[in-house]
Length: 126
Image (cartoon, rainbow, N blue to C red):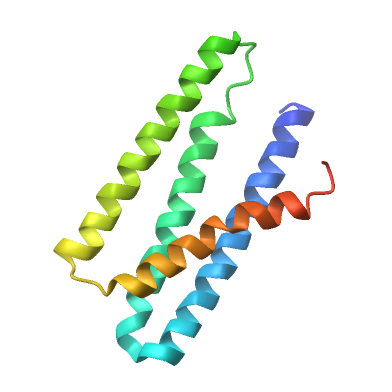
C-alpha cells in the first residue's frame, strides 16, 4: 500500500470510528428521551451514516491509478448518485416498511454526517 493509501485508510478508520461513537451517543440520548422505542431508529440512522461513509471510501479511495480530470469527476458523480439512492432506499425501509419514528432516525443520521467536519477540523495532515 502506498503512503497515500495508508493515510487515506487511517482517515477513513478515524471517520468510521467517530461515526460509531456518535451513533452510540445518539442511541443513549434517544433512550433517555424516548425510552426503548427510540433506540432502534437512532441506531439505524447512525448505521446509515456509517454504511454510506464506508461505501464512499470503498468506491473512491482505492482508485490509485492516474486518472484524467474528467474521468475522476464522472466517477465521483456516479458514486454520489448511488450514495443518495442508498440513502433514499434505507430511509424508505426504516420509515415505511419498519415504521420507525423519524426524529431519532434523522437526527442520528445527521449527527454521523457531522463527523466529516470533526475529521477535517482535527486532521493533523491538513
